[in-house]
Length: 328
Figure (cartoon, rainbow, N blue to C red):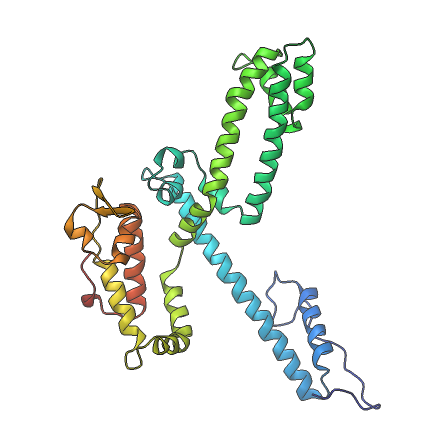
């Protein structure tokens, strides 16, 4: 493609954006597609029908790539929400329970949907808002402690608007005996509001672990196998650089999957004993497992079952014969 056009040459109009363009699905935005084409025309300055055709095909390919990424994300989120919906109807615990195996009392108060619906940035912003509101609540608490006639109004003025509205609604409802007095407001702040802050902070603190758990459970083994097939040349190259020039990574991966599938599922508590600065399994058979197997064990029996199920499905999708895998 030329850097400059002869004086006699004129650019044909950009043509790929009408609603009926065959590259567009009914719900896709023709204007966005046209903008993409115009940007490519400005970048490559096609001259002649062949170059115009190539630019148009490039635009179609880029558009379809965006569509595939959007579809992959939508599929992943659909599976994710199916899992969250299944949790709501299950007696076997939620994604928060599975993410926080050792904190059952905490996990019962947490929401998987809230964690998945948030982001690291949103969590950070909410934490800042909570800190600000807590500071205002402390000011209200201090005002109530002064015991003056104006203490009640001063405390109301110190509260953030949402907490003040919560208090007004609670007094109006009268369901828990709240009264518009300093004593009642002080008790409200000490119980309801403080508990809410504690719960909100716990949710934010555990959101990353819950999100990781939820994303992992919604992971599609078939897509993982296809991704592996796509990246395999680079993986094999890295494997050789690590000192395995004559061994296929397929074999290494198969051995790793089989080793993890051989990890036992432990029901009930397991005794540990101090070892150095950490702990070791008291059962010598468990302590003799590989580091990866012991790490898997520490995730709890429910998560061990989930991970082993995904690994088995990945192994079959990769073409590893079922008779090579440990029995379930």
